[in-house]
Image (cartoon, rainbow, N blue to C red; front, side, top):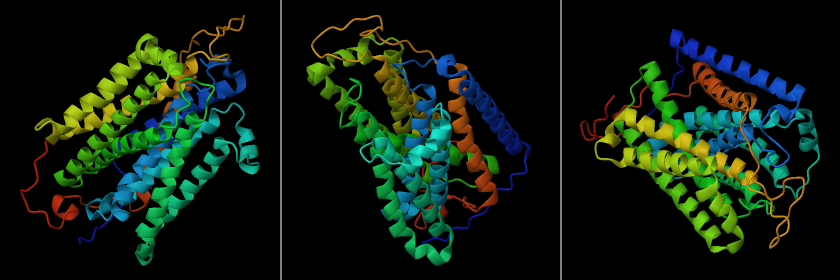
Length: 410
């Protein structure tokens, strides 16, 4: 098995500092958006009494779910013994921590009363899935940090596999907890389904790997380090499998709901009559975010072009954001069924689809979480040895024969 040499990036180029400056600027605008919502109140947002989780929650949930999936590359290397993924394991763990930090930053700042987080951290209601998630998020930080330590400290290398196995189980539980938030909400017709938990696990695999591929290609192109076709080909094939997995669970979710009469209303809303939610579901989530990437990744010639592979990963991310938006916002917009089998009407607009338009502070706060995650990654790879000097084919696979791999377009 090959020995991999890791080295920090120099980070002296104008492009590197320009990216960091842009991310800091984005975080500053996001901070101003949070300031307005904190001091003016949430009335300046598009949220209401019915839609209490807005666009910031869409970004937060996306980043948290993607954090779990980003660790998948490291898990494949240590838990399943696929040595070809070993040189990518450190970056995988780093990205997982940074994405979770970015997602939780948005989540905390969108609470309206962030100081009350202290109450949630000191008084636990173990019947609440939200209380369980606080434990799971903190545990994820600690476990992945230890996991990275075992990978980066040679004397602790023998503990990498057991710690990696524990981290693998923990992240599955974490994503199950995030999906169960929606699965346990029986008051919302768009949620209330046990399949939400495995759906979110499949989503995490897809979103996290798509972000990982884009980050890997960006870092190696930016630093001009060798990145062979072998690593890219394995990752893009794996991404295709995960995209298909998400499609399967989405199909199972909607077919199950269509079978149950009580869910016919919300299914008609999402699939046919929901306006923007229907458009996002069919055209962005299914077509642009799933079918087009699958075609790009598995096409005999397109699947060898790195630019198209990067485009496929980007479309998966866009489709993933649309999917989370439809789940979170669309599920709340559909009117509550207070008295099943009866029509309810009052001056409080029962039975009416709730309107929602994201305000700029909400969008900027969500993008600020993305900026936090990316800034952490770019800073970490400059000060610590997360990236192998080379990911050429003969380094990724010691049994690789020169010329055996397909040539990908630069």
